Length: 481
Ligand SMILES: *Cc1c(COP(=O)(O)O)cnc(C)c1O
Image (tube, rainbow, N blue to C red):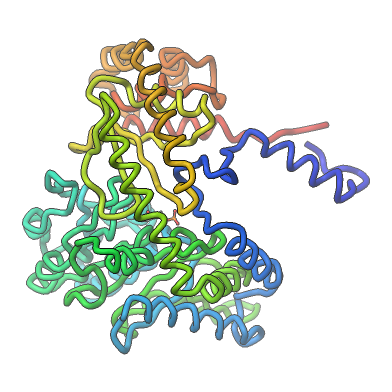
């Protein structure tokens, strides 16, 4: 596509964009059960207004825009107070969970390296259910991610973690809750291991940290998960998930200010303006920060309690409904509004496609380390008006999926790629694999069951190679015209 010689009118442009997003997940009507966190119109509107108001302000330099420093300290203060954090806790506003996790990993790595300069690749201990963002951080930061088994309820196993800690370990990770199954790890027991071994502990409360205090008020029984637990050194909470802020909003907190030195970057050794950055980005919009601040101030504690109660109660109804559908079962009773269910009789990947045909987005999760392939649901407050419709379609989708053939793509790849090394996958083999999954080339297919089944049948390193090849072919520039 060429930049138009003469600029188009605002009306033309917006009409084109409206057309473009016609094929996206229809979240506005509450039909997306992942990716979107919707507090309803009023919460959305104030976030948008504040975001737009600060769109152009540059959070690169708090001396030029002191209001951004103030907003950041107030947002961190609101989160710290919400979690009853002890005096001395500090934190920063980041672009998302991934950035918060990167920073916490970097701080732990550099703290460790100061004391053990001879260790080239410090280790991070990750229960199998810890978020992929820690693997990604390890990839960027040259850390070794060490995965350890979880218990039958998909919660971290403190003994397995203890066994994995060695003299190269720079960080232990626990989740509150884990994304996939929505259960809270035993953080107090992990804190014990951390203290015993003298290793820091990061709590990944990205998805649920903001929600857990409310769910506890409603009677959910999970252990302490925050700085009240001895041994917890850092914690991440996303505001763009269940604090309902516009996207680009997360917080990373440290128990001790001295740790954060490893996070802050300064450069006075070049010919331009002095660089001092608390986070990864340098020039960055003030929009996400102002948006998050405004949403927290507007919804308020009572407003959040109402939204969270709707989620809490809708989740109970969803779980009961799933249990009542022939052929489906929950992988585990969730502590939160995030849940995973599967089937031992029907292909869950066909169920996902059938739900899509009925205009619902539900999220497929591949099998991994004792967690059978499944469907994930994140229950939004708005979902409370949709639970019965969704469950009726889920029942119909399960019956429809029962009639569909499955197993072909899995059998093919298992046979054809047994023993194939992930690093040897070339474009020809990749094309064959797509063919086996029922695709003729790289495109976004209407039905994904074939490709999901194929991926599910392969070991993770080969899955990853295929996904990388797929994306590398998917993102090609639209040139000319
Ligand atoms: C979403 C999530 C992350 C990653 O956050 P992003 O905002 O997507 O970068 C990390 N941990 C958990 C538990 C999450 O749910």
